[in-house]
Image (cartoon, rainbow, N blue to C red):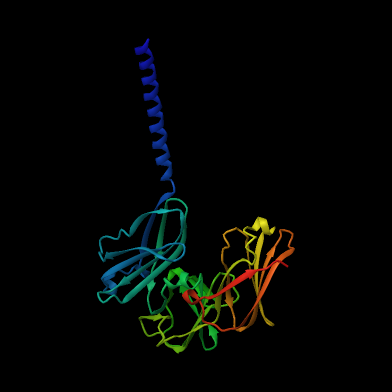
Length: 346
């Protein structure tokens, strides 16, 4: 009887393990379903070849949906063979550029595209002769430090917005928004003759009205057949102006007998920074951790700070005020303004 039971139990356990392994295998197989093949090829204009351009190699670069460089491949020129490249990627949107360069890395031909890759995808990039362009660069490491999500660019010549090729499409460079983490904006086949002016503004969100930092070059030319690389963080070439300040507000209840939001009977903490021309509000749920509140994009004015504890109905049960005086621009990132407020019962 013992042996029979043991054999039955052992057989059942083996079946269970086999089923479990099968399920794990299928699960692992399913986990790879989000990866798809992304095949990139390219074609030079008018049937030209590397030899026509006296070129040395292609440089294929792939960027993610926020225009951050993912990978690049240098492909030597070969008149007999042009395989491009194939990647295994997640389903997403991608930006791709292909540059034909000579032995000195000067650009001879260029093509780019933006595409959604939701399944196995093949793209063909038609490349055009290259007459010159501009590349605006910035340190993307500073984006998070300075609470910047987007850079908005304006490029003007003779008082009119300039049109340039951006990711394969002719685009008017007027409040042209680029994710800050991209670290660069490439404008392709810019006319080298005119004089240009550039303005860029840094924003905390895509729909922000107030710029946090402005950059300006009042007058410059692009140069013939080259890329004019401009580091907008370079103070020798670009006028950079911090336009706002930020504030961190730490708080606690004025009375030690109140040790929680429930004891106080409030559900929300609201900070209001008020001046005769401007009012900024920050709100968060009262969480018993006395979490700091943050107010961003404060322009130069004289302000009063109000901190309120509210019921869910909106009734104010606690309130304190503080005259913070004139707030000047420039206190952002590690230099953020800090205020401590004791919240008093009304």
